[in-house]
Image (cartoon, rainbow, N blue to C red; front, side, top):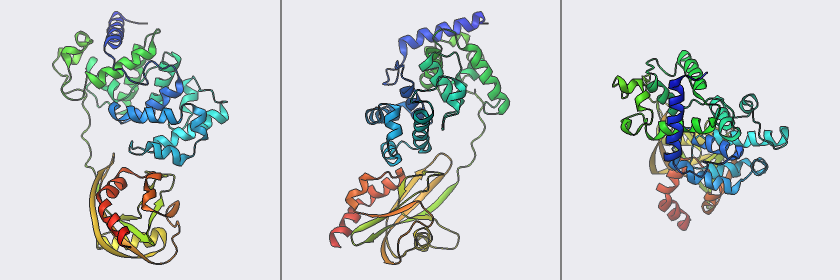
Length: 365
């Protein structure tokens, strides 16, 4: 049963959302497929980054049937640059489940939604409330921050006990009418006003109801755990040429960057040089011998839980038959065909940095 304070919060947020919500291509769309695609893309990714990807994706795959019928390589290529590629793989898997097991009809219950690959409690709640009008809560990082400040919750919000409490609290707040709009208002508030640093409290529609603001604690809540030190790895890769063709290999489908193509190579081991690392990794991974030449470039890249420094070397093939020993596939491609394949962002950085040297090598070969 709603309390007067809850009613005030609901009314304030819904009115604010109606007047100030950002105009986005996936807003106001009742299609659960579109809601699902947008929510998956928005996971750990800024809205401004997502919008052009979402628009291209929906033009290419406007229905769940189109997505299910597509080749995974095509989906990954369209996703290239957005990161967290397991999202794309799970979208593709889930689309096929919806088509094959649900007759192409999007599930509309929480239990059925969370049974789909890549859909957790938050995404299921977003789809169910926004697309189907279900009175169910959502709890992402933005909503968590808003609730911690509104109710002055000073426990570690990521602890199991705090998560349980926050989900229960979020559930009590969702109104019977317009649950999707209310959930979006909480997310929008956290994204645009109740930000991690320097929240814009004077513009907040819930300022008078916010216990953290009343105690001048909006800048210290929520109390997040100290981030662990990010590991760093040194990686050496080779641009291996043979008869004007460049060697690429495909990562195995499970694990980080699964299904993407890359340059052969790997982590430098203790006691070996970078050139030795390139030659060893290529031999172990693909089974060929190479002569490691000049270093073409150094590229730094950060993932969610670690950082790498990539050293890219020009290599010339000398012996052996390229085969997928510790990868999913290998190919010799013309450098002009690079754009046809989906590569991780770090590999694309190498292609950009080494473009002139690659072209010079090809012209002189």
